[in-house]
Every structure is written in structure tokens, then in C-alpha cells.
Length: 391
Image (cartoon, rainbow, N blue to C red; front, side, top):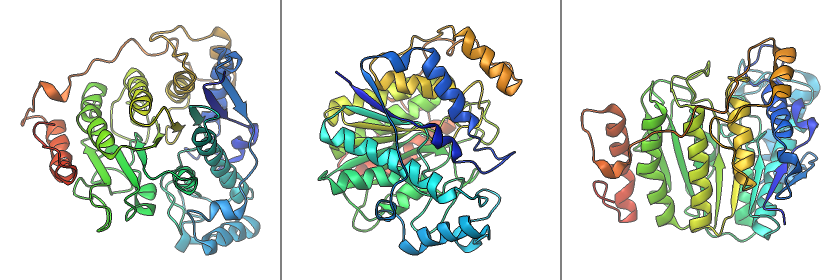
């Protein structure tokens, strides 16, 4: 019986802003090559689903019709529309922009439908996680917000409560803004402090609109936070608020740009720590949401030694065949990486289990990460009846 569904088509590689842009299709290509070389596509617990672009009605569940029309128009004419974030340095216009973005939406919506229907327990779209796009504008390499579309589809199918957990180094601002006033959606973002990184948002005091106080949770970490302290931050906030919220499904975004080798961010979170975090989210889905888990990709621009390792591990985790830490990576894949990129690929899948210290060990007021954690707990925990110092 299939446990997980992986949404994939080579057509997803057409989400391409052009040469030199950080959001290179090679991220996905090398990931899927590694997934194949590791034998994950042959696992009976994993099925692979193809995907066509979503129609406009689906895209418009989270985007304004005028914006969708503007994306189509810019793609056809090649003319920028800077008021809507189109044709900027981050989001250059390209001819297949609408279809490519709509395909990402379709994949994440398919994942949501598959999980809610019970066809599979988990579903993965490594090409997804475009969490910056807003209802009426592109932003931060994101044309359409497939993550928000997955959450919205779960609501439309009958879910009363959906938790969205965002592990990208950048704040999940687009998803948060779309559901800011919706008490049915809990958005939790663990990210680099917005004072030091795009998009400049995600303050711990931002806890949701007047109708949804406490449903926006932001953990803003200082630059150079390492994997152990990053896991400590997750442990200190995510399980408590998700358990209290009691979601019927979890959608998570696994942008891997928090790694120390990523060229666009300033965190220092290892592959091992990111693999651990995926396992925690998986376990939490089984604990609180009857296993309903939609896992998405996101950011990540160290395309050889980080992204394929983290996302292949995510696929394996969802399929209930987790990869052992420190696994020797397939020689055939390493050769392909060298041929395609000219870069020296990683030899092993991390170095071992990530070491971390749980929040229950006590608060250290001299530690900048602990202070960031406590700021979030002070703002959010009381809205859920939780003690920021004890629970």
C-alpha cells in the first residue's frame, strides 16, 4: 500500500527565471536524480503523480483574478508590471511564467486532495513552497503561492483547522498574509530575523489579525544560528502551539536555505538538523492530524551539496523509508553532478545525528537565540492558555 505520493513532472523544470538566477531548475533536477539513484522511486510505499497546470479557478482561490490576468499578460508581452512584482530582479518575466507557476499550484493542490481523501497519508511536492507570493503580487522568486493554495484546498474540502509550518530561512510572509484573519489556519514560521534578511517581516509580535489572535507564530532567529540552536527553537515553540491548535492536517515548507553554505542567508543549519526537523514534523502529523501531511520544498540555493540531500531525505521520510545519517551517496549520482555542474558533490548524507539541547533544560538569558525564543513564547503562548516560561 502506498504511504506517500510524490508529485513530479520534468515540466516542473520550466519554472525558470533564466541564467544566473538563484532559483535554478538544477535544484530540482539534481534532487530527482538523487531520489532515483537512491531507489526511492522503486519503493512500494511511494507513488509518483504527474501534474498539469492548474486552471485559473484553482489559482484564484488564493490570488486576485486581476493578478492572474496580469501574470498571463506579462508572460505574453514580456512587459514588466512592477506594481505587481513582475519583471523585477527577483521575479523576471518569462514566456511560460503563468503555466509554470500554475503547475506548481496544481501539484500542491493534488497533494492536499490526496492526503485529505485518505488515498495516502503523506504527499510531497519538492518543487513547491513558493511562500512569498501575495494575493495580488509576486515576490521573492514566487509567482503563485502553491503553499497557500494547498492550505485553502484542505479548508474547501472540509478541514476546520490546518497548521502551516515554514522552516525556510526567509519568513513565510505570503502564506501568513493570506490567512492573517482566518482562525482556521495556524501559520508558524521559523526564520532569520527580518531585520537582517528579506522580506523584512516575521516579528514575534505579529500574532494574527483581530479575528485570529495567536494563529500567526513567528520565531525570528539571529544570523549565524547553528543547527543545534535552530532545533532548540523548533522544540521550544512548534510542538506546543500545533498541539494546542489541534489541526486536522499539516502543510509544511522545507526550504533548505538555512544551511551555512547557502549564498543568500546567514544561518548555519546543517543537513542533519534539517533532516531531524522533517522527522519531527512527520511525527507531529501522526500525533495530532491522523498522519495527514503535505510537505513542500521552497528556498535553497546551494544546489549541489545541500538541496538534493535535504529534499531526497524529505521524500524518503514521507515514504516511511528514512535514509540513514551519513549514508554514502551513490557514485552514479556524484558523477552526474560533476558532469552537469563541474562542482564537487557531497560524498555522504550529512555526518550523523544532529545534537541539540531541549528547551526543557532551561532558559539562558545570555543566549541570543534563547532570547528570540522567549520573545515568541511571550507573545503567542498566553493566547493559547500556555505559560511562556513553563509549557
